[in-house]
Image (cartoon, rainbow, N blue to C red):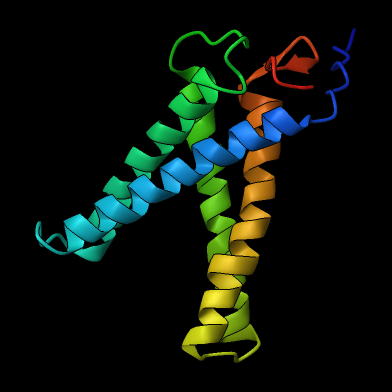
Amino acid sequence: MTTRAWPRPTVPGRRELLGFAAAGLLAYAVDLALFTYLRGPAALDPLTAKALSFVAACSVAYAGNALGPYRTAPVRGLRPFAVFFAVNLAGAAVQLLCLAVSHYGLGLTSQRADTVSGAVVGMALATVLRFWGTRTWVFRAEGRVGSWTG
């Protein structure tokens, strides 16, 4: 039985990190704007509004990464988007877990504590997970990801 040796990933370069961050910031803006619209003028319930804004933001982030820092990685079919979506769901779960531990486990129930745990600590940890998952599972190509590794 032979095992497939995974090529060692390269160390992310500044351009790769900046491209990933730019795509993420754009996706965050889309998520926030669409959620605000769907909750306000469109009058949707919060879970439906968030689900729709999350899918839209994931699509924007995927397109931004596929056309930006990972534009040279081979992408075929819907599988890479599905994996990207799963990585982003895992990131959202990390944010919720940080909030739950802080609010319910540690008893830090103020609005400020919720914001820090969910939107600062949770977002930072989720971003690291998303970056790693994106470059490792979505846009990996023969041990080298993207063209912006310099």
